[in-house]
Amino acid sequence: MRIQPARRVRGELRVPGDKSISHRAALMAALCVDERVRVENFATSADCAATLACLQQLGVSVTRRATTIEITGAGLRVPVTPLDCGNSGTTMRLLAGLLAGHAFTTTLTGDESLRTRPMRRVIEPLALMGAQVTAHVGDRAPLVVVGRQPLRAISYALPVASAQVKSCVLLAGLNADGRTEVIERTPTRDHTERLLRWFGVAVETTQKELGGADVQTISLAGPARLAARDCIVPGDISSAAFFLVAAALLPGSDLIMRTVGLNPTRTQLLATLGTLGADVRVEDVREQANEPVGDVRVRGGLASPRAGANVLRGSVIAGLIDELPILCVLGTQLAGGLTIRDAGELRVKETDRIRAMALNLRALGAEVEEYEDGLSIAGPVQLTGARLAAHGDHRIAMACAVAALIARGESEIAGADCVAVSFPEFFTLLATVVES
Image 1 (cartoon, rainbow, N blue to C red):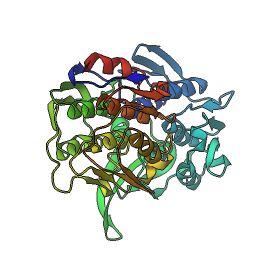
Image 2: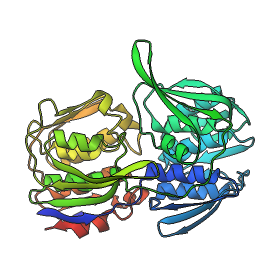
Image 3: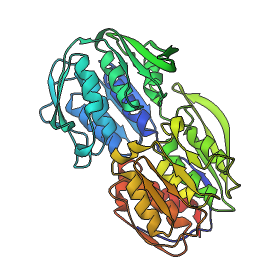
């Protein structure tokens, strides 16, 4: 993919449905036995398609017309072949929790990238609940899940902040005998809790003190039955992030993103953009299937960051984990640059995102210091077009595309087709709002 520098970004866009919500809506709809559930604005990503394909192997009826799917569950059945989760860690980790509560054996596998990602974080709590989950090598996929029904209810403190692990345990808890609790020291995205409530499951969220620290406990009583309800998936704010940052970086830009998800556990990006000097406004906030949505408008040009805003670390990192690659690009244009710490989780995503962004930004002419848990980017600097590499990671490819828009001269992104994993329309939509 070759990209020329842009003058500004102007117009209105709607991004595809939120991937995190789409995965969860499909899985929960499949549990509504003998009921049809209609999900509108379902994500177009390859990751979410992998979830649908796995459900079909499990005996779930799935029909799709454009971005609308209809799912009819009939009770999950033993799959004939291993379930291929593709590149989707969400599919594998959430399905492991769902299948742990069913009394049959399933193998979960995926592509080469997915088979390198850590799975011990879901293996351990599921084992405590009575399921047997074994990995091929160490804690890597393929995973063999020997389910049990009912599972044992547990109280589980997350060792690392992870919405996927929380969701895995809660989905397993639907088929556990008693109340399952997940304890979070750092709150993570709560799409699973919101959707479970939408489908009629009583989920409690409470705050308490544990060991001198404030923690959040999410719990539900099992066994629990879900009630069929149609839903509309909000636009994916993590996909919108690339357009929002592009607009902020190019003076004269004026971009409106329509019907974007504004879940409080996902809007740290908007707050961070504001503190880093971007002109960001939220309009027409409303609710859709227990999720807040609204329109986000960004006008181009960066003011000076607020004092202390140039360092992102601690509790804000969990709320920015998917947006950190594009914020690295923003950092190259900030007075004082940008430092990111406490983000070691980026090392075990689709690729090592810390290393990948450091390599690409250096190729563009930026000065970058890399740490084990983050990086420091000097700024502001005029970027120069270069040959960049997606490293098989959709977010790296999209972040590089935005960097190319503000560089002097043409840039080329090798392997840019990997954006299909999360956002196949990305380059087409980008072309509709970029003015050269």
